[in-house]
Amino acid sequence: MFQYFKCKLYRYLIAPRTAEAVMTLSNVMRFSVDCENTDDLILLGAEIDQVKNLIKLHQTRFDDELNISFAYQDEIRNVKFVPLILLTVAENLFKHGIYTDQNHPAIINPSIVEDKLILQKHFPFNALFY
Image (cartoon, rainbow, N blue to C red):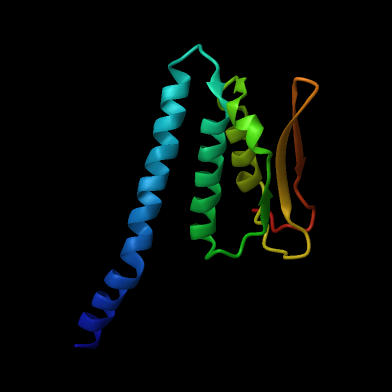
């Protein structure tokens, strides 16, 4: 009887978050495949949305304990740029460490300075590496 209720509780508490994570992952993967099949520039805003999705996925994976700063000015969303650059930097963030120290966030801050994309990034050395 206990197993039955445990299973039901798990299904109602965990399943919605899992379903949301699957849909988010699906969006990131669809974006990546679509970008690989084009030679065109894309709006940076579309890639920013996917970086947010990637951060959301990893926050789910680590029970919202990651300390990641992803900040940008809204005007860069309309800049056309080569696809998958920003997403690759974000993927490397998660590939090379777990950033849970609340005093030392991992930082990704894209900005435009004199018509050039500047990507400020900082991945703290005190992160757990795996």
